[in-house]
Length: 358
Ligand SMILES: [Zn+2]
Ligand SMILES: [Zn+2]
Image (cartoon, rainbow, N blue to C red):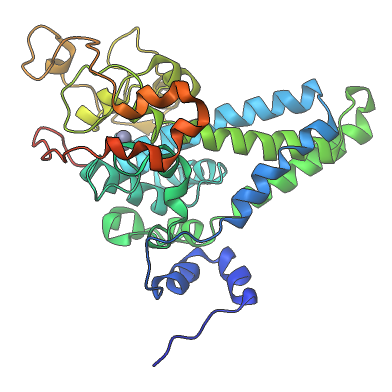
């Protein structure tokens, strides 16, 4: 029987119910093709409204605050908790953490964790959903998630999370929390405009800075770990993927830039293995531990903290040759186009048995 073509209304309705949307997309023959990410494009274009509403220190401070807090929601929650289970918590606080991660507007906790677990299993092989060495910079950075085949939550990869109905609910209706945050920004700006007019802000201005700009910058900040952290930086460990340690990315992502450390050993809560590898997410998690909200943070094995003794350590901060893609960066943005990165489609290494699965 021929499959019914979904109407525009179907698509709009199912946008709010991502599990239904996944069903809609799964019947398409070409799973590699992209669906048009309308909300993402709308959000990106809307950042231009910042020029219209103008600069205001209160609104910009809220934007920076929400960038930092929600980056923690992605790194400390979606990544180090839901994807890798590097610490434990109670069920009620797990839900609070999930709300925080969800507020970053990077889809639901199960979708995020499932795709990330898949990335660790198949890093930089043709199976990898976001590998700059396989499909180029833009695909790894921001195009991969709008391919039809990546719309669905791979529940088979997250059975430990799928047993919680409250997490399934957030995953299914993953736009509820971000939309609520957007509404709260309008309410906050309107409140300040009415009661503290001297601050010079408004509901619309707060919405643009606190939600639109902050969320867009946050998205690109997180995405650098899939794209740039597999291209630029140094390699302490000879992993079978292209992951690198990069101090600048570690700053803007609150510690995720120690990506080579993480790919070598992804079971520890900490990603900056040494004191000089700043890992703000880890410090935040230690604070939550002190408050008794989380516990059993997994340590970095001692053998990895002794650079001279461990056989799997090459040399601290050894610089490996840059891939061809990295050399094209001087050609500007054009050098980042997927077509120009085919040189990076190198041999697929066998998966290292030393890398633990999540
Ligand atoms: Zn990676
Ligand atoms: Zn990871």
